[in-house]
Amino acid sequence: METKKGKRGRRGERVSGNAFMDTARAAFVRYLALEKWREVDDLGSAAGLSLDRALEEAGRFPERGAYRSLWEERWRAEVRPERAGEDAGSLFAAIERVVRDAVEAEEAERRQRGDRALDEDPQYKAFIDRVLERLLREGDVGNGQ
Image 1 (cartoon, helix red, strand yellow):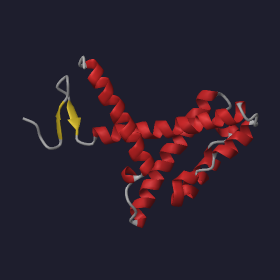
Image 2: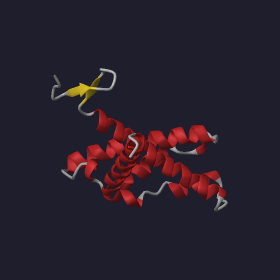
Image 3: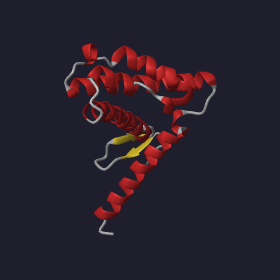
Image 4: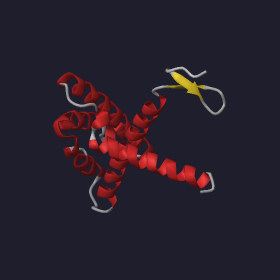
């Protein structure tokens, strides 16, 4: 018998009611971090900017609206070559940490202000829609349809 808190997974393990949302949130953080990392890489390789300048340019978050300053403050404090390291892996790890921290800070600020939850943010919703659509397509292929 299934409970409201969870249900049985493929191998009989319990699946928490929030497991999908937690996984979706982690995937969204990874997606945003990859987008910023690619932006830094593009600014360096395509535009010919130094790493310092590319990080400065990529550290702008106009898409975050009222929460822009939360993101930019964290970026300036954490994503610097001397802190992040100049190799791609270390830099990506620093970017991902900043994005995760900024998402958490933005969620807290949204609650405090009484604003809609991050789950209602158009960028987040579009990300979830794309992922679900891809999963459904893959499921159709796997079922021979």
